[in-house]
Image 1 (cartoon, helix red, strand yellow):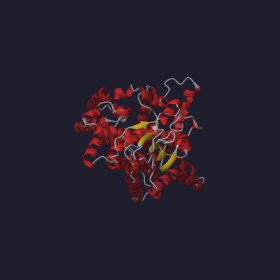
Image 2 (cartoon, rainbow, N blue to C red):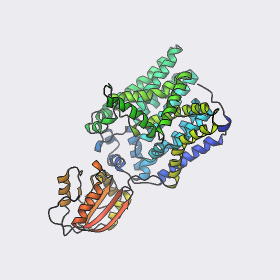
Image 3 (cartoon, rainbow, N blue to C red):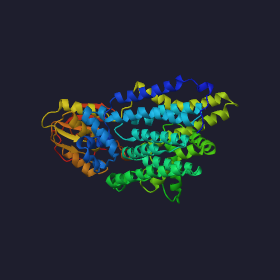
Image 4 (cartoon, rainbow, N blue to C red):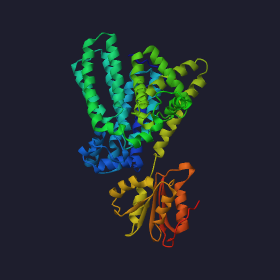
Length: 506
């Protein structure tokens, strides 16, 4: 491992502390904004709140998948703190904050001082990392687990001694990681390969034997987890269809297959890495890879192998190579990007200092501005909670409720949380099924008070479904009240005069 060199411009010990402090604050502000659960969160939350600890071992409802230990922690949080967004998002927040300090230690160990500061800023400012630190999903803890594994591996490489207690510690942490983070298996496999190679080069046979014990313990835990849970996800047709475009073509024979690699390569720098200029990020990434491959092969393979293994798993349709599911790879990519950016700055600076400064600013400006904006206006996704409260406060016995199909699960969660009467409601169908959609609206005819609730509204084939439905209802009766929020809304209609067959209004 390389000793980090101090550089005058970035040598102040106060700067990284200020960056870390900002990272903690912006994550806490986003958490305290307490936005409503959106569709995906509500589907997982319903599983967490409706099941016992042991029932969470069974395949989840609504085609959801999450690590068993993560679900246990979430269930315990709800039992201890009550069923609320704060309780459900507490563990992701803590994981997001801990990941800041873990990344600090990893980056400081392997990067030059300037690259270390750049990487820390990119990690702290990353829009996806901030957002998923307050999302009822496992992606934030995926990042934390992967960084924890790397800290251990870096320590073992530096110490050159994988003694008995290291075997015990690494085996236990690896086993826990498998149960709390699905993609940790890629990280553990990659680090196991690198450690084995490292000890083989030095003919340290005792270390190899002890490492083999830890790896065998991981394999046993993974086999149990696969039998209990993962095999159901791997054969879920709904999930396989949903992620079909995010599986790598194993044999790229067609032009579209080749394009998949190009599009995927550039898109990951925008999301989940969080850079506005994918070209700058990709160039920095490639130069950073070259730097590590030439000078620090162990670090290169430590960071690169999990990316390759995840890509390979996607080729066998075992793990989608897309967006939030790749959040655990973001720290490794930022390590390469920051070192590559440092290389570019050092190449440009002797010729034109202003250009070197402009490159640095452009790389950091977009994520920095968005992170700062989150302090002023936290991100809201689908604000269905105030909509449900509005209905609850004005609901009369006998009212009819029509739910847009995308609002169902979030409505069910808040219906239970906020005591809305458990009356029958009509669940709308996808508007591409035109006749069924008309039949849905026909069921509302003749009622004096009909609530129409929208959330997670889709726009298939450029059709604005909410506008089309409201156009139909405006032609059928009178709008009595309405409340619009961020990507959610509710309307109250009097449809007593509409007891006749409907025609589609364009």
